[in-house]
Image (tube, rainbow, N blue to C red; front, side, top):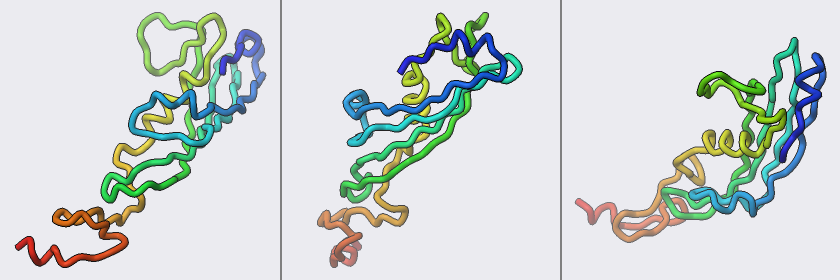
Length: 151
């Protein structure tokens, strides 16, 4: 979602609320993660003493396959971010978000922020036992006698 920020940059103390959802279809090209529900983005653009900041909270529900036991699970995540927004920079700089023509597509900020925070190893639970390496049974839900056969 694109926000017009021209007025905000010229009025100290001004704020602009952010509250919208990114539909799952817009995230369908992301590999390794599945979003079956919209991602909710909330926050505020704020001009404090001429410096514009963007405080964001990104809430999502991730549907994933456990990397150990291969069972499907659903887990909510919530992450908060703060960025300084500028109209231009003199050189490449990752510290600032540039609002070209005083507008900013918050999706281009929120989605990468979210993806960088999501875990790379997805587990249904911290103590997931995984699958038996010999017979393939899910050790979280059943047991097998294969452990003795491996010796």
